[in-house]
Amino acid sequence: RRGYVRVAHPGGDAIGSRGLDMHISGLTRMGAEISGEHGFVIASAPHGLHGAEIMLDFPSVGATENLVMAAVLARGATVIDNAAREPEIVDICTMLQQMGAQISGAGTSTLHIEGVPALRPVRHATVGDRIVAGTWAFGAAMTRGDVTVTGADPAFLEVALDKLVAAGGLVETRADAFCIRMDDRPAAVDVVTLPFPGFATDLLPMAIGLAAVSEGASLITENIFDGRFMFANEMMRLGADIKTDGHHALVCGRERLSGAPVRAT
Image 1 (cartoon, rainbow, N blue to C red):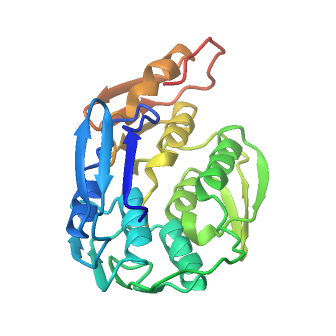
Image 2: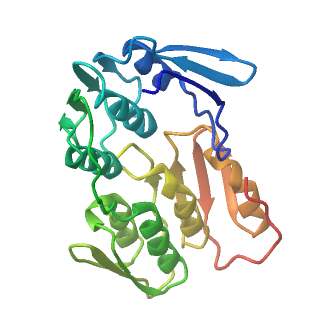
């Protein structure tokens, strides 16, 4: 958009491969010239960006957001197939539309964007963070607590809240809030992570935390990141009974865990 950029390769938390290939491929189709040099990504668009048809290999949230933001000011029409459908994608499209962007299909796997010459400033309130809300929900279940979470749409957490009900929790939902109460020791439930509307990968550690103190054995399957179970060794320091094999973890619940020094990866 500004003609030229040189940016260091990103880092981030160690949960597996987080390649830039879908970002680079999509922007290249839109007219960008991208290369790598000494740990930096160098990108230029000497003739500006133009619309393109882009098929994502995986419904990546970051790549979808990046390409949508590029497309709204590019010349012509852009179609993004196999786009992410997360609530945050819908939210960023809503904000861009308020700014004057022409976007249709938000919340579906195909986005149509017609480039506009300029955007205008707006005031926009983002959707409540479903991962934070889900963390409180699982925390309440693990500790046999009673918590009301406001400011988050429970529809964004439907699968996660269903899992907590299956574990024995009592869940009540309202328009932008939910209550979760766990009276007894939670029962073991199996969890499989998937792109939205499936069980969010960012809630997998909380699911393992719940499984570690549940009654019975839980099978937790991770389908998004290949290094998501790196923290399992630290959980074992707390007394958790976890066995990992590839993208599966078998967690045998214990009555309670014990304190220990641990390290976040």
